[in-house]
Length: 160
Image 1: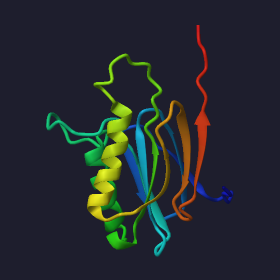
Image 2: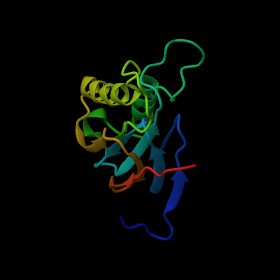
Image 3: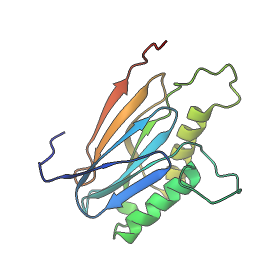
């Protein structure tokens, strides 16, 4: 992915979202978390979220660390910036099984991936590409103006 020297950069932390009219290259690191990139090819603007858990349980504030909140907020932000919902295209990344758990009850990664697919389908926003699941984390680099995404798999390292 080419970036001009004048292109702004932004690091997206877990539980956050980002969308701007200007071109940005946004980077985030995903394990079991999922990032949804929304891109409007008509206006050439994009946004991205990074959520940790699928569903907000209704306690505390409805934070974008929860997928159902993060996806709705990102759609709202894109519409606020002038996008039409029918122009939006989605790219979904993450949901790697990076944590060793003996219990399949948690299935955090799988639930995060399923939520993104289900919500985007309900909203009528097509997922045009993505890279989800597996056993590795990912570094995602998203250009908000071109919609291009570079994904680098993060190999596990032994510590100790």
